Length: 577
Ligand code: ARG
Image 1: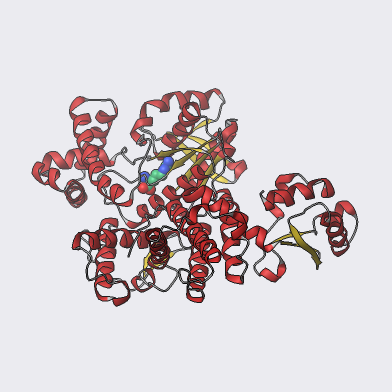
Image 2: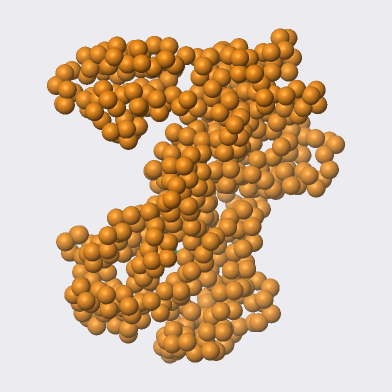
């Protein structure tokens, strides 16, 4: 039985509200003395023409008889506070958690619907810096969250692989390029010649004209230009792939900006048919005055395409190819205007799906205490950040007696440090609401006691170690008789069961506002409450065998919950630490 769902179904006939509205309103109160679920009656005051406290007490008495899993309903200050029978909630949520395992909180909510996630999308021939790390980690987590609740997802890497800078790179490479260096460190070499191009162009403006000409030749498909561009793209992607592998991130499509170049004429024709295109100093633009936005340039005065026109073509292509329910762009907030213009043009053209396109922005990345060795001036490369995090984790593991394993082979220790080090970086990106700036601080990131990846991962490993002992003693905690589970009812046990019960609701909410931090908060609460429990109760030493088995089942359920949540963030749990 799903308590939440049953409460919603009980409220529908009494309130005349649709189930979805009740689902939105029904909350999990911050303090347990306010019940396990609470329903505010304020919105009903208008339709029922009564004061909220009166409505609450009437509803309480009407509902009381019908929901047999309820211990009591209290009407307090216009709220209905539901208290579920403790042992019932505990035994049921543990059984459910054991049944779902690593899929805890999964559902079929989004079945038959496709969500597109445009994320990561670095620029070819440019370093993969920490801003791209943010979109990569956020987008990856969102794709997992959507999949968890039944959506089909398509992960799209809209590579920045087009534009006049490629004309510059072609010119620069022919003049100063080093083919060997390009093979070994492609991005470093491309960056070097790109910088050199700009230095030289200050003295020699002809270079700029030559670059524009080379781009034009590239866009018209000349083999030499295309071959060089292809080489830059392939080599850059190979380098990006190293970080993607390390982070465990995969894509379904690498259709980047270049992919849409030949699809722009049809877009221009379509917009022209709708009489939306105007000439503005030689450029072709769509005015967006009525949306209080600056005009969107579709073609520059020399006829070439720009970032925005390629994005417009991409939306149309994606609709035809994937028939999306949502088309999400995980891109930094500085590009908010760009997306407003792109969606604005589509809306003006009567493209109905414009309303299902969404820009999911995020803040800046800052460093509190850092002196990170950077290989390319001011930008901080993700690769360097990951390596430093892993190195520091290794140091901590080596020096911290509590987590040190003198007998652990070096290779295992390295593998664990890699997972924790990378997990810590991911966790830091996802820990707060995405629009807030992130301040990296090693102390916080690698604090084994704080709200950090190492803390949560350590808690998981601890739970797993208890279960390994139980396995050695042949205890079958996964199939405990439900009657035994009713022996659990302490405050800690109840709190843990409630957290497990809340998984589906929290995950659905995280998806609806595109905020993985909600999953982070859930897993931190679960880890904290679990550790408290673990300190209070000596689980394996519990005298009564039935109670011991029930407690082990709870430990197993919590370990599944932690693992499920970490998976949704893109963090790989480790079995021992
Ligand atoms: N390449 C762009 C950048 O690095 C991000 C692209 C985002 N996706 C899009 N469809 N515009 O800023």
